[in-house]
Image (cartoon, rainbow, N blue to C red; front, side, top):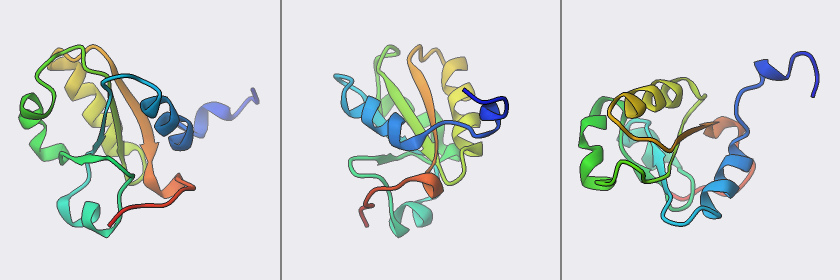
Length: 106
């Protein structure tokens, strides 16, 4: 691990793989519906940052593993904090889709 590795942020590719390997995990895209429609990670559910209060309809159990991403990692960081304050115990910010190296769905 290099001295400046902390500046890099989460590795979305590794986070997506971890999500896929976690039973019962949900992948949440917290971008706007328009951004989501332009391309999103396979199997991601769109729940915009401004609509996080609707999380209970997607994940009623507070121990559901949630993997959260956005465009750059900023909104997903905010969403992670909000979800934790709402009582969700397994929330992971996997960063921004602009650093993703796989195929997206439209």
